[in-house]
Length: 110
Image 1 (spheres, rainbow, N blue to C red):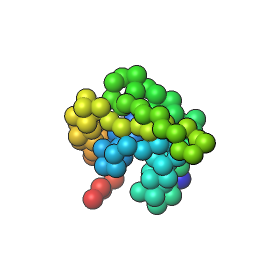
Image 2 (image 1 turned 90 degrees about the horizontal axis):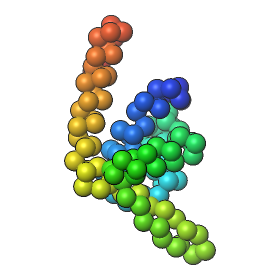
Image 3 (image 1 turned 90 degrees about the vertical axis):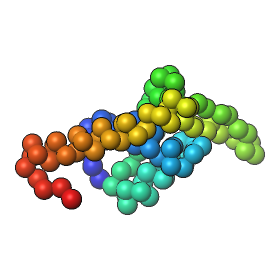
Image 4 (image 1 turned 180 degrees about the horizontal axis):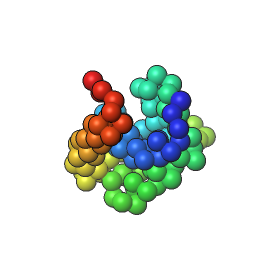
């Protein structure tokens, strides 16, 4: 498990990339996909996930759709066109940040 501080700075990029790769998803589904992709190292809490999703929605990068499934209401999130165009830039920016941190910390990255 990684520190919450590290996750906080990367959460929006993670969410954008997961939604780009997997399309429309609801909150719990996102948490499980991130857990699976990280082999259990990244565990998203509701307290971190939903504020990040709401911020991305407020910024016009996500859209929501509410669907009744049985007696439950499920809110699905998907990328807007603006969100789709921003993903590649955010991922590239993050990769460059990782490279820079490797240099600063004098760590060899693959």
